[in-house]
Structures are given as structure tokens and as C-alpha cells.
Length: 130
Image: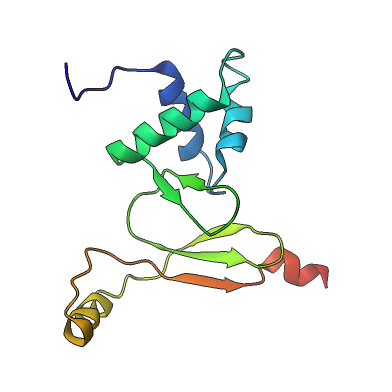
């Protein structure tokens, strides 16, 4: 049984909550949702389970330089847009440009296994507020 992770209803629910949102939530947001079903759940348990889900490849951890990491269940390569006013994160369904990894190799000799592009600006909701 070494190396295997036992089944967990709480972990399954955390993954389910992540699959039902495209908002790239924080662990605290996930905790607030899952705690409704499991009142004895701790924030530490959510963090541990998120760590396991990331390690298993079911969840991606996004570090945008903010105080809190964000998580998503969408693990296929894609790009993100970050609003500089409200902090929202959106998935962008733009094609992945595989030629960038080839350009990197020819320019530097480095071989990348994947890449992600992040766009920064003001989201539609914040632009309407002005």
C-alpha cells in the first residue's frame, strides 16, 4: 500500500467543487463550500487534500504572486487573463503556440515541457464600472 493514497470523501468533494467552478478559487473559498457538507472539516485538511490532488494531477495550483494560491480542476494546457483591478482570473481558450517552445530551444538551448501565457489588464466587469 506504500505510495497509494486511500480514498477520501472529503477529497472527492473538494475535486467536485473545483470541477463545478471556473473561478480559480482559493483554498479558503473551497473550504467554505465543502464545510457545508462536512462541518468538522479543517482548513488544514483542505490544504493537504489540495496538495494530494495537485500531486496526482487532478488539480492545478496557480501562483499569481498574490497572497493566496488559487486552484483549478482544468489541467489541460491553457492561458489565463488576470484582472489588475478586481483580481479575477479567467481561462482563455486560445490555441497553445507550440512553436514558442521550439524558439526557446533554438535561442537558449533550453527545452521546455510546457508553457502558459498570462495576460494582464482590466476585465469586462471592471471596465463597465468606469
